[in-house]
Length: 82
Image (cartoon, rainbow, N blue to C red):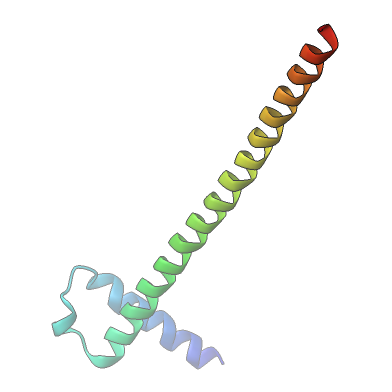
């Protein structure tokens, strides 16, 4: 277990020195690690977008309900006035 963790740390340190390296110059193992890291970044971005979208939808529901309630009350008050 400790040996696997040391191996992963070594791989991560090798990639940190070669961040700007084009994919063609990486070994297959480094390329896999690079792609995994890129995939993790993309997953975080997609998750962030999904969370923001969920929050926006919740705000829209609240605004829609408040607007609907406002117009219903205005209609009731208008009908009661006549």
